[in-house]
Length: 99
Image (cartoon, rainbow, N blue to C red; front, side):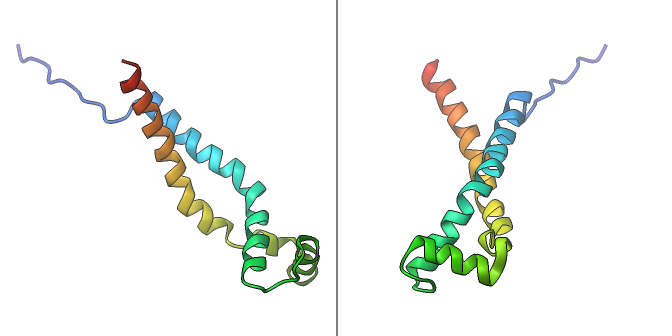
């Protein structure tokens, strides 16, 4: 009789859920903070009025609501994997620290 070779798992359901939780958190946060970030960047470079209200009004008038979400896909592509790995490493660290 041949002994069964051990199966090693690189991921587990917990790992998958931690990674998905990080991606989900980023996906939920993006619609909230991206308009803020776009306005902040435009104010920093002097592309808009010196007031937040004036900058928002100008952007909405010129670019519409779509302009407030400029760069959403690139932001998610950048910070999504970061958040996923952050959640995973945090869980691993707390497991090791708690042991």
